[in-house]
Image 1 (tube, helix red, strand yellow):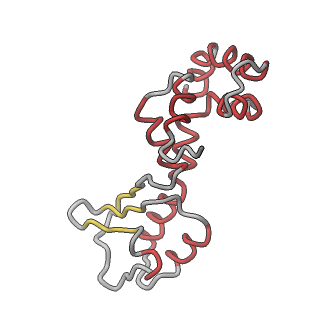
Image 2: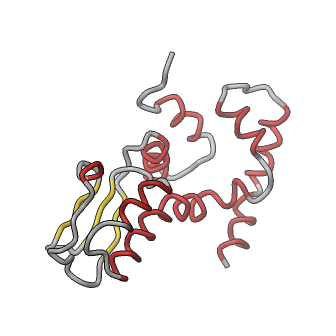
Length: 154
């Protein structure tokens, strides 16, 4: 059975005591439904034209001067945006900010969990192997994570 809405994954991640907002953003990133935005410090020039194949994904709000993208920008999409007509250095910087946003989100919110190599343990946890030694080790190390997180944040 496919967990299209991410409900099962949310329950598994809730075991990590993550903020519900972070959980929702995490699921949105994985499901490619999260909206990322970047502030432009200049009005978008009328000469800037969004590529036809990305017009349903990217929006510009002149009132807030924000450019938004409703997906994770992959390298090919970033290249397409950067090659668009009317790209200035500031627009280019905003596109790079949108491209970097998912990585920044994970670095900001999950450094504690990935500081040590917990890949196997996380996979075990997310796949539902509740009795595994890997899961128990992950949960033990996460219980010490608040001190680890403080040292990373400081």
